[in-house]
Length: 202
Image (tube, rainbow, N blue to C red):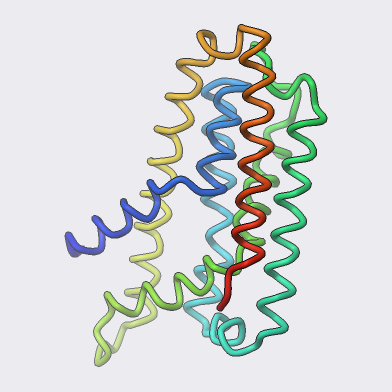
């Protein structure tokens, strides 16, 4: 495994995006366990993009404006739904010993956040081949290996983000005024990410 690939992966994964935001919100609102579950969901959401890139389906998204636009606006709609849910749910950011949401729901939300982001497919389509030799007889296996490493790094980094958020939540969201600002921040961040996705091109 090349150092260049690992460093590039780490930079890409550590850059705050929808997955990081979702994991932070889970850690702040429901603790370390919920943040780890959220990280699992976000990591699993990478799988369809990885498979699409490896099997060549990403080429369709890259060449078909309609396919890309449909997936993009589904992603925008879901991010706006996440923003609305965050602002509407007055209990979304409270310190609780048990999670009011099932692990399955947290995982599904994390998966959907990443599935409905067509830029991930394009990213894998453009990123993976750079680290695979063009004359390799096992290019598919090599891309699977690199994708597995990317997923492991994603999970590890997201867990770090989430556990850190869980560690400071008692100091942050036990104050009512901070709770209100946290809801606005996460709601606004989801809206901003939806806007950025809406204006992205292939």
